[in-house]
Length: 430
Figure 1 (cartoon, one colour):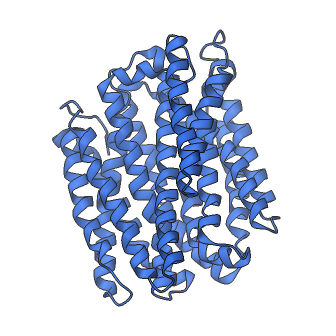
Figure 2: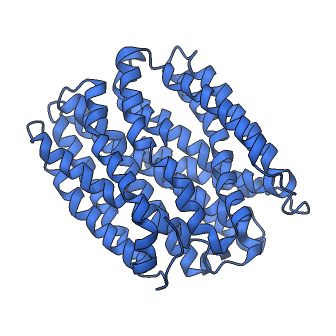
C-alpha cells in the first residue's frame, strides 16, 4: 500500500523523465499488478511443498533487490519490465501472507487477525503520498524504490526472528503448470485488451477463460484454481465484492494526484497534503470497526458503507479546477471513512463455510481477484482519461470527471454481492 501510494505521486514526473504518455507509464502500475496476480497461483504450489517462512523471506529479499535494479532504469521499457519482475515477488508475498495468517490464527479468528494486520496498511494512504511527494519534489524518483530496500531488510530480520516455520501443506500435490499458464494468459490478455482498446486481445482473453472452464471440468476441479469453490455463495459474493472494491477505490487513487497536479497546478508536496484527509479518515474508522461489525454484522455494515461511498463519490464527477478546496477535502475525508469498513468485512467473510482442504486454493482465488480488480480499475480509468485527453487536449478536467463517473458505476455494482451474504455477526475485535 505504501509503495503504490508513493508511486502514484510520481506519475506526472516520470512521464516527463521517460518522455512518455500516461497510457504507457500506467503499465508500470498495471504490469506490476498483473504479474502479482498471475504469480499468486504458484504460491499455492510453494506452500504445499516448502516451508512458508523460507519462501516468504526469499520473496521479500527478491523484492528489495529488484527495487534497486529499478533505480538503474534509463528508459520506460526497462522500468516497466523490472516492475513486472517486482510484481512476481510481490505476488508470492501477498498470497503467502494471508494464507499463513489464516493457518496460524484459525478460521474462527481470521476476521480479528485481518483487522489487526491491515491496520498498519492504513498508514500507506497517509504517509505514502507525503513521502512520495516530498521525494519527487526534492530528490529523484529513484528514491521511491531505494526506500523499499531498507524496508525489506527490516522485514526480513523480523520474519526470521518471529515468524514460525511451517511444514509443507500437501507434498503430494503437483504443480498445475497448464492451469497456471491459462490463468496467466486470460488475465494478461484481458487487461492488455482493455488498456490498448484491442478487441482482438479481449476476445483472446474470453477464449482462454472458456478454455480454463473446460480444463477445470475435465480435471474434476483438481486444478490450481478449482472452480467448484464458487459453489459456496459466501465465498463467491465476498470475492466479487473485493474485486469491485479494488477496481473502484484503487483506480481513482491513480488519478487523484494527477487531478491536483495537472488540473490545479499543485506541486507534488501540495498534492500529497491534499490527499491527507482521505488517509486520516481511513485510520479513524479502524478502532471502531470491530464494534460496528459486532453490532451490525458484515452484511449490514457493508451496505451502509457502500451507500456512504456512493454518496461521497457523486460530487467528484462535478469538481473542477476552481472548486473550493474545502469542498474537495471534505469529500475525500468522508470517502476515506468508508474504505476500511468495506475492505475488511469482504476479506473476513470469504473463508466462512469453506472446507479446510480448500484453504490454500481459496487464498489463491481471493488474492487473484483482488489484484485483478486493482489492475482492471487502474487500466480502465487510466485508459478512459487518456482517451479523452488525446481526443480533446483542452478537456483535461472533463477527463478526470469521466474517470470518477466510471468509478461510481463500479461502486453501485458493489451492492449486488452484499445481498448474497448471510446475516451473522463477525468477530473482529478492535
